[in-house]
Image 1 (spheres, rainbow, N blue to C red):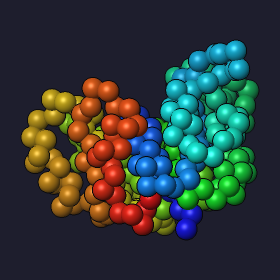
Image 2 (cartoon, rainbow, N blue to C red):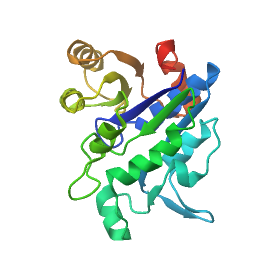
Image 3 (tube, rainbow, N blue to C red):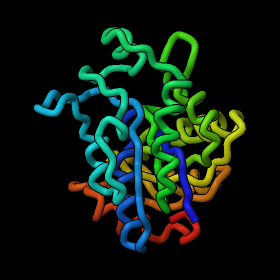
Image 4 (tube, rainbow, N blue to C red):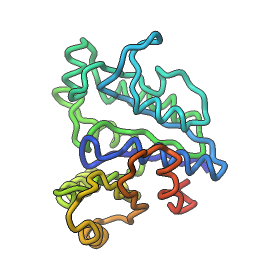
Length: 228
């Protein structure tokens, strides 16, 4: 049965793409067809083929359904800045309607396991009037929240979870991704999150020097079979 999720993070650099790539890799290892989308990406590099984003490329590397880059990452911007500012500077209009149309191309492929990855945290603006969370609401997909575990993560995680639920979406679960190797009282922070988060912890990913998809997959492969 085909399953699709929207994956978001508590903040920029929470490790959304590392976890997403690990999930896709784990799904592949279980014999699933996989596909992922990064609708909006800032911080792209110019190549002979055009602007390319390292996060989008990482997702493509773990996708078994071959699609053109432009369908995986339809909105690519060079500056590593907020998407709505990057779009404005590039003279591009971002809208929920446009993102939704692009996402339908991905979802219609009906891969066994599909991820649509957001940008930054939950309430990221894409224009003066719309947010990336509005796009997620329109998709009506269950959400996976990647918690970047560092000082302050409990507040960020609880507020993000509250916003997702208040927006009427299902929080399928959260992944603890240790981004700060020197995080004080790590075990206690994780225990507090386990106690207070209104959704199951799907996996705990330790701080990895080389967070490639195969390595991350070792920690997320215990996610319930029904989600992969």
